[in-house]
Image: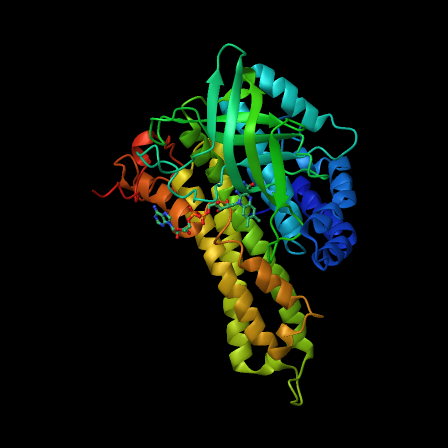
Length: 434
Ligand SMILES: Cc1cc2nc3c(=O)[nH]c(=O)nc-3n(C[C@H](O)[C@H](O)[C@H](O)COP(=O)(O)OP(=O)(O)OC[C@H]3O[C@@H](n4cnc5c(N)ncnc54)[C@H](O)[C@@H]3O)c2cc1C
């Protein structure tokens, strides 16, 4: 295909419908929810918005049509996500996490698991179906592919062969959506577990589907400074039993983690772009009208004009990098591990400074909570840290691919296939010292 950044008529429609939803439905609800002191109340306050999003097919738009989903391409999903994030990035994180929980079933799950969970998600008439994705742990997640069984993922799933079940002991810390609307659990949560006490991260990890209401699982909400319209919890397992038919990716949990955070890379990237765009839109209006006590709007000052030019350039560049990454992933499903990591780290880190540059243009009034800049600043702090932190997890994956001789500087510009292999894992973990 020729290089073409034009949106199709269907994509333009998607963009402006998402924008209308963001302005009319999301904006007022998110502003009210963000102001609530209790984090669970903030999340629950978003339920009517979620139900309306579900009625429009947004909450499962990325699932294949074959299972009742919207069949949206990665590029299409990004177009919608940018519009939502320009208003509030917490709420679209709920949609992103539905994807992180359900899409692995396409690659690693059984047909029975797909038929059960993808159809429940897409066929939910209440519009409240939630799927959680639980990989992160309190002791740290960045070294999940460490060769020592004492490092990385520690949530243990022991096989009780007699009863045909796995028994879970341990904790997850930070999973999104997992507590559900009432802290009784999401409809289902995909949990990365250790199924072998003695193996390293490249052979001992698997995943299990933990259904809502499973005895022995408790949820406690984390009170975070930003993205308050999505829910993060600590999930504690005390002898929780799940049927062995709920196991997937046996011994391949490491590959599942890497594939998941590759898929979400450009989504988190465009989320950062969306927040920066929201800040930029406000800033441009401000610069065209506010005089700073002078006799003309501040956009007339060269210093302001120069900084606005830089802000706009970085947003434009970031957006097209995200589109390119998503386009590559559409062409090569399950690949793009380096590009996803580069895209997420580049946009996540850069857009935080773009938001701060917007504040520099606005001036001291950017700190006044009655204007939106203070919220954009809080929200932008999330992007380098969540969805596999930029400093460790995301960069290590890109680094591992680049170290492989199959990778060349032309790989992505040529749109060449580059399957991810285990030999690309484990870069940057420090082996145990004697
Ligand atoms: C809004 C939001 C939503 C989230 N949703 C989910 C979710 O749905 N499910 C879920 O499981 N988690 C979720 N998280 C957690 C998130 O994915 C984290 O990115 C993840 O837990 C990894 O954290 P970390 O990168 O800081 O790793 P940690 O292991 O906590 O590492 C901390 C820091 O140590 C350094 N470090 C450690 N090891 C290395 C290394 N080998 N090389 C270089 N640096 C290293 C890095 O600087 C890293 O930043 C969410 C978080 C937020 C804020």
